[in-house]
Length: 64
Image (cartoon, rainbow, N blue to C red; front, side, top):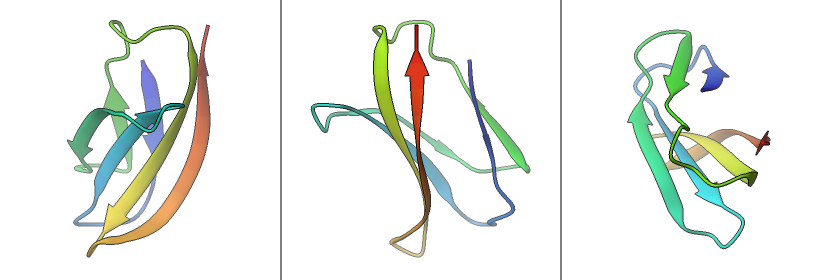
């Protein structure tokens, strides 16, 4: 599982693999958003919190 903590409201979390493909997208509904990464391949992923079509927060996550 991937956990994203944010205080941004009315936002969406998007996760991309290192090839730039969107692998997950989920609305932010609480201060901690949990994404199921069970089917994702091992590797590094970039996550973005997007609100009003603008990137508010970004980060990297590594699945082993």
